[in-house]
Amino acid sequence: MARPARPFDPGGDQSGHAHDRRPRPAAAVRPQNRTFRRASMARVAFIGLGNMGGGMAANLAKAGHDVRAFDLSQDALDKAKAAGCLPVASAAEAIEGAEAIVTMLPAGSHVEGVYKDAVFGRAQPSAILIDCSTIDVATARRVAEAAAAQGLTAVDAPVSGGIAAANGGTLTFMVGGSAEGFDRAQPYLAQMGKAVIHAGASGSGQAAKMANNMLLGATMIATCEAFRLAERLGLDAQTFYDISSVSSGQSWSMTSYCPVPGVGPETPADRDYQGGFAAALMLKDLRLAMQAAAEAGAATPLGAHAAQLYEAFVADGHGGTDFSGIIKTL
Image (cartoon, rainbow, N blue to C red; front, side):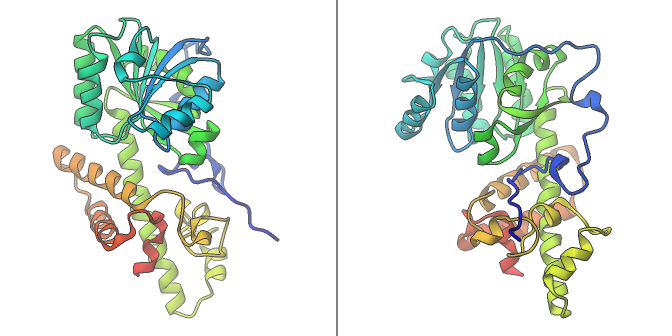
């Protein structure tokens, strides 16, 4: 019998694993005493059309929005046009008249640069600024404060989910910002994802994302080590999976993203660790987590060790390999 394929959800949204546990309490996702509306057709600026942003912008266009899309890549612009977006020549052009401004950029410096050079002074006061990039907490808070000084409302809304989730509109968004900002951003985010969760004040979305992915990186390494130990002790991998997946060692890395080929649901391990969530991106998230831990004075020895192991894995030429491929080094 063919093993079921399960799409990757980096960041570890748990709603799809074997026990199907739902986020608790429900108010964390749909706060009580708030009325959510669906976003009516609006002009949306979308800046950053990479592997994730391209699918996200396409879903907003599919929902009926007038999406003005910008990226430095002509190929990305061509794909956005084919998906129903209107490609424009600059971020500034995309922002003119926009009711929502979505950014999906590589790093905090890019987000600050776009806000400083294109958003501020052009965005109308009624626009909601939604940054879906994965960046450091300090920059997210600084950007939100700068936006407030301009009379604008901004939220940080990093995502949990891979390329397939971005294309399919099944991302999970962790949102940092005011209650007002969350309420205004939620209708747009809901059209790109399956869950929109208010994490707290500005920067909280980024904090949730990096803490969650630090946990994912560390548990994946532990899962890889356990399979290698079982192998050395003469235990069949499938047998170990059958036992651990229903025992106290169970984790998302075990049951939804098994790093051993031929065991559990289909994962990148069955494709020679190609596709999925690149090790270089996991390393980026772990570096952000370590930076945040240092700034907050938090002790994260396992997170630090995971970062060191992924540092070596990427330095050895495996940046494009799925992060579960780190099992090859054990």
